[in-house]
Image (cartoon, rainbow, N blue to C red):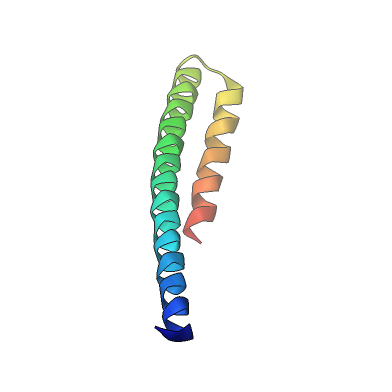
Length: 74
């Protein structure tokens, strides 16, 4: 077996752990994306309702949201 056989098993074990971690992080990222999309939809709905009722704060929020989306495209 030798010394190098020992390191080979350890490396495979570490790779398996890293793959598990990557899978878990990917799932968490997808969950957070979904949560952010739901939050964005709720905020847009609230802004829309505020605009229909003449809220100046809703107008300011819409401008802020537009600026935020513009900054993401840069």
